Image (cartoon, rainbow, N blue to C red; front, side, top):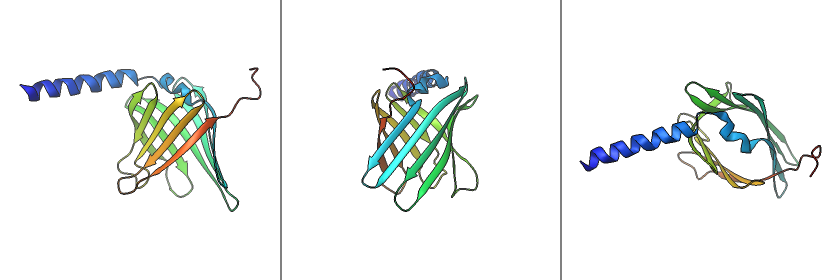
Length: 155
C-alpha cells in the first residue's frame, strides 16, 4: 500500500511540475544581460525573447588571452522546453531538457553529454543568479551573475 501511495504521489508531483513548465513564459526572469567578473575573467550571458516559443541568447567569456562565444536558445516544443547550446568545440548543437522548474530555480539536463550534464539557474533575487554547470564525474563550476542595467530604460 505504501508503495502504491508513493508511486501516486511521485506521478502527481511530476504532473504538477510539467504543468508549471509547459510555457516558455516561466523563463522570462532570464531576459536581459547578465555579467560575472572574477579576477581576470568576464563572463556575459544575454537573453531576448524572439517569439512566443523561443528565446535567443549568447554566452561570452573574456580573459587576457582569449575570447569564447556560444550561441544559446531556449525552445518550447511539444516534448518540453529545451536549452540548446552551440559551441565551437562541439560539431553539433547540444540540447538540454528542462527537468525542474520552480519560481527561483531552473534545471536543464542531458545525461549523454560529456560536460556539463546539468545546467542549473538559481535566482537569488531579480538582479542576481548563480549558474551551476555540473557533470557526472566532476564537481562542476558555479558562476555568480549580476543583471546589468539597461541603459536605454529609464529608472
